[in-house]
Image (tube, rainbow, N blue to C red; front, top):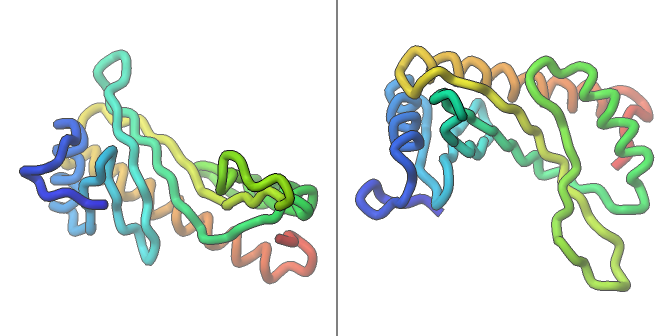
Length: 157
């Protein structure tokens, strides 16, 4: 859910970074907590916080709309480990879709891309560095997925 600037309860850090990303031409919106940025053809959720020394910590989460059932976890984990070896900026993880699924149903996990970046501030130069990082991360994740799908037996989900 996006909020209008007057209604949002986001931090000044988030506001500043969203503004800087917009100035770079990216589609960026405030969320209840954090921001949503269009990177390539995909959406990335940003969690933005102040670090201990005044720097800015940006955690990026990219849902991939790929789901894994509990019974295929061994093959999926092996595939994720292989794909993670090809990533320079971040990793692929499995997140449970539900905290507590019904007793008679297996757990389902979503594959999510995650990356973290430290910025010295929320200015234009650091926003450009973040944009470059997010674009490279998005590209690497999808190249890795494409390679795994095209490789016979690389990942079964």
